[in-house]
Image 1 (spheres, rainbow, N blue to C red):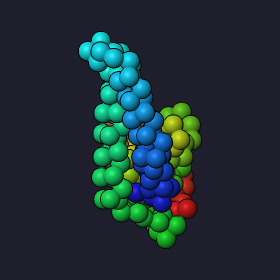
Image 2: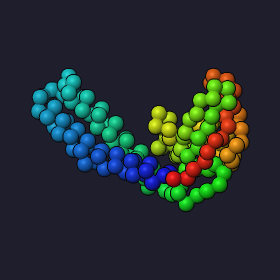
Image 3: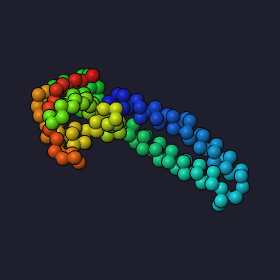
Image 4: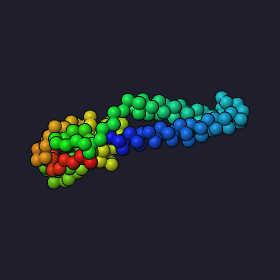
Length: 151
């Protein structure tokens, strides 16, 4: 994953451990004070939230511990992990720019393209000026690679 993706996951993990976990423990404690737990909605909601937080902490700890951080600025050449690629839809002439990143940091709305996505797989190994064909839910799409940067 990229340094930015690793930092974001690590910050999420720290926030969950230092803020969210203690807050839900307090909420459970306060709900217990209300008496009968079998019909205590606040208690059950807090326990459910605690379960979600603990699961997310385990997930993030695994991702962070297994992460291999790659610095894209030290790369060059054809499209590979970490590349920022500007492409143009050959049918609509619409330009888009994506950075190819790991699954855990992907966010298409922010231009972070999952390396396992059909578009990223089609782009890998290609150079500027190359055309790629991608099978999408909306049908076959053709893109031309306008620019490849490693930042």
